[in-house]
Each structure stands twice: as structure tokens, then as C-alpha cells.
Amino acid sequence: MKLIILDRDGVINHESAEFVKSADEWIPLEGSIEAIAQLYHAGYKIVVATNQSGLGRGLFDIHALHAMHKKLQQLLQEKGAMIDAFFICPHHPDDNCTCRKPLPGMFNDIKERYGIQQAGEFFAVGDSLRDLQAASAAGFKPWLVLTGNGRKTHQKGELPIGTVISPDLSSVVKLLLEES
Image 1 (tube, rainbow, N blue to C red):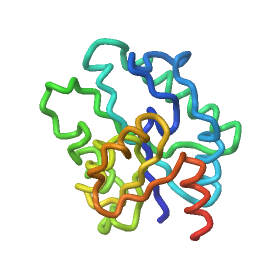
Image 2 (tube, rainbow, N blue to C red):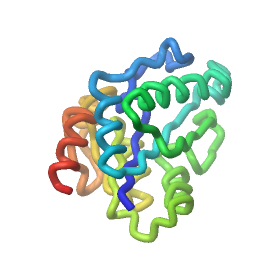
Image 3 (cartoon, rainbow, N blue to C red):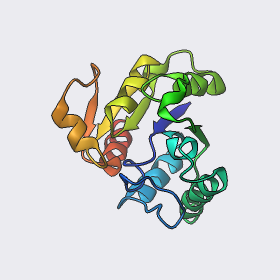
């Protein structure tokens, strides 16, 4: 099985300090839809793992979140592709849940759902240190993109051992497809 895990905000779509709260505010990064479609057509299962504390903060509701994800899926359908699954942490940062990145809960759930024994065969792409830490803690290979918060994350250093770095999701996909 070929599988890749993607963070959402800052990797697939534009990040917002004010939170992305609606489908209208959800705007894909240049090339991200095409990159995901390339992965899909190359036989990858694409999974999104995303902290969405805007739910826990009351900034938007589950219907708005579903509308954002429906917009993503519709853009991908136009290219004959799709996201296989969305894993979300809806909790406020103070809720002390186990699914909020940097904790590995969502990634462990992904391993369980897909029957993954050796997570080190699979990449998890993110733009923040917490994305990479959660992936690494669950045994996945972390891959930093420099979109969203990625440049800031890279400048701070202290990345998990073995983190691969690329300018954006399109570059990640190009490298993955060249290697396969």
C-alpha cells in the first residue's frame, strides 16, 4: 500500500492566523490540488490529519468544516482524484486530548485504520513543528514543506531526526514520484 498523510492548513490550503472558518475562506495553495491528484493517480491513499481547534473555540461548526472538506473533494473530483480519509482533532488546546498534534493520537488512529505495522514506510507532510513531532512520535517519516508556517518552522530548527524538507507539496510529489 502507498499512503501519505497531509496536514491541511499551510500544506493544502492557505493558513490564516484568524482560522479558516468557512468554505469561502478555504483557498487552496497554488499547485496543491494538482499535486494531490498526481499522488492519487499514482496509487496513493491520501489522508488528511488536521488540528481544527476552531471547532472547540466555537469559531465555526462541524457543518462549516464539512463544507470546507467538500470543497476540497470537489476540486479533486474535477481531476479524477479524492482524499481517502480526514482525521481531525476538534478540541480546544486546553482540553488535554490525545489527538491534538504534537501528540500522536491521530497518527495512531491512522495506523489502526489502515493496518500499518511499520509506519516508517510512510511520509507525513506538515508545515509546523507539531505536525512533524506527531508524525515522528507515531513512527511516520516527517516531511516539512516551507509553505504556511513552514519557513518559520525551518528557521527555528529542532526538527525531528530524518525530516525531509521541500518548498511545497508539488515538490514533495515530484520527489516521491521520481523515486517510485
